[in-house]
Image 1 (tube, helix red, strand yellow):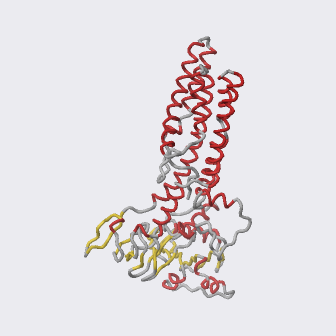
Image 2 (spheres, rainbow, N blue to C red; image 1 turned 90 degrees about the horizontal axis):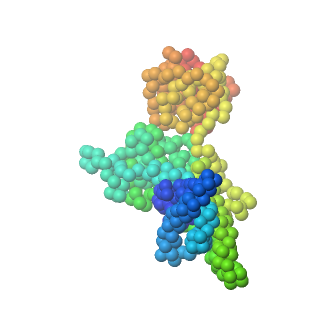
Length: 449
């Protein structure tokens, strides 16, 4: 998920949620309105009203900037915003309100752009943190009690309901658990885990409710570690941003030196103001933070978790990528690749029946069949008498036909065979993790890989 390339307190965002105060987002509206009001007053023949409008707009932005500078100086952080502050203050002191309003607009516009970029990154991270459960159902004797995650301890028995995010790392107490681990591993197909199998926090229960025995406290679990990683990365500056800060300090010194020389050489303080105005929209103020935050936000938008701005910078130097094993890189969702019809049936009709029944299932492969059917423009019917067996498949009626969609175990329980002359059924049974089968008692069978 996204991380901030700038100090979140500088960007006006919370390091946890990435919320950006509306003041910074709309800060550019103040000088823009003042500038337009002043220019309109001049155009309408009232020049005496222009200067107050420009001055008021500049003062408002100057007040916001002054508060930010004081906060940063208290942390020992000296930035290029001092140039903008001196330029606006100098413009007002030298009775140049139009110049002050223009500087205020440039500065406030950059602030709004940076805040908007940081806000987009923060919204994606907020979605990550929002998935983290706050409470869990713990077994206490013969009863269940909803307790905060901080109250969970190793050995506690926790009921994980259908659709719940697993709150802590642990083990399956008994039976089996069907878990969607795509948010952690990118694997599209859910994992079927038996008794005593390890379970990672952050996965989603897509099967029947099961009891989890906690192995770690919530703060020590996998998903909590991911959240901490993202929060720490958001609070850390990227190397390039620190480099811009170092150069920025040098730029500030050179700017003040040139402004002083211009004043001494001409005896006109307006010359010094001109130097400050030219130096104010320095790209070092905005280019690095906005570029990094925007890049991290875009990566987060497509589901790529970047540890921090430094990691993003390092990616620019990479020329070779080594992947440790097949299947490491996935889209995180299943899709229908091909179909094989084992009887004289229309492929589109078989897919329509399967997808119609799978509308009632939350299984990732069921969603893949439904999406493919809709992509082909097939008209799906409403399924009835639906019975789902977690991890195996679903049965029901579609258009008065009995339909079975699932894996080999479900087919065998319904007395359906995969034996065929060309060995298609045998090959499909050897690869249970890569296809869904459909058979009906009429009979007909469809295998989608």
